[in-house]
Length: 592
Image (cartoon, rainbow, N blue to C red):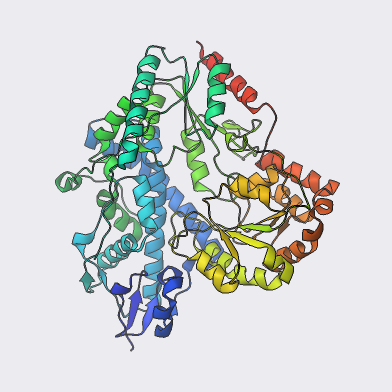
């Protein structure tokens, strides 16, 4: 029987050519290194999640396991830190990390066991144990999930725990993160900390008669207007967490961590075994440091805390918000991107709704969460949107792209959608007319996650103009005659809210909708705005580009756009007046 070598990541130092090679997944094959892996002629194993029913089943299993582990981990951490916080407190602090950790761990386990079932006699090269790392915080963990060496660590430990013996190598040229601020920023940071201290000192005398905004997505000007319209009762928090020094791992104390549960299968046994070593430093060794930092940067109490984008990665904010909630403060969340409210399953949305008392959407509703959702206020993110309209005097087609990590970060968002989207690029170009190709500008996503999108596009269309996120999106949107988008995200909602002539296309099968959202997207399909295939989208682009004004201003198409925006991209005049009224109502309900 032939023995195969299993390449688990894109790190070529951990490959060998002494055996026929098997690639665990598409993430192993970097586009800019195809001259290295293509000649090897190896087989790439199909994703176990190509069966979408299996993917959804895995997502629900992971979510149930997350909900099972959360209160148990809360008990463990309370005992470890000598505290008595509620499960809700710990959900706020570590829920986002635990969600992703369970998802990523299960994905790596399933991919490996599927490969082993197909090729029982394999060898591989793993990572030396002394090169293993523990994430500093939630953000570090998610960043590490996007890079190869941390995933090699995942695969190495799972294979070892399953009883496999294989050679290992240390990590060479490992990057060491730094927490030092650039010299030019030190004065600004000092000024911010002084201002934050002054603000906190004054607010601590006000007996919780205020609402704090943190990463609200309101502009600074609008935050000032809210302050004035509420007579000084709505305050933007201006503090920034300090650049934290590393806190050393306390291996001896970590060895005492144990989640009291009875694993129901092999995966759960491995997960519970790995968890004490994988839980980020900010929840263990750095917990008291973060708590002190929260006390230094935030007021001791507040009537309510409002944030659009701090619930997942800002550890200092999360500790303060969790402690404030236990003191009776209301937690107010707000949607910060355009992909909420429509995907069939969206764990980040579920988490934010679960930890907040009120959650402000862009207009959509959700079965089972109606008591928390506020749907009738224009979102802060869209408060600066100005109507653009159709204009034949403008020139060019702007195509906005996105990318997803090469490795699964959260179920049910596997990499199949990313691979499918990349495969649609040449199909779109082939179906565009020569005129449309010359008009095309491709706007790449801020982080490419190793997909080398710009390089792929230049190979497809050598003279294509590439635009980066260094150009503000709304500024760019103003310049072009037609906007095209290949994914559900923020930019397509912003474009529709701005009444910009827009063509959308994505794979309906890989982007399933929840039932209550289907009719709104069906309306876009009927109006000729949303398409399933790149060929259909290209055909529409070719037809409408010469006269977007007549096409876009069609009454039925405008009615469809407005109907969609009422539920997924709501805007309104006098936005700040409406929000000031909402905040004043909350303050009056709670008393003054």
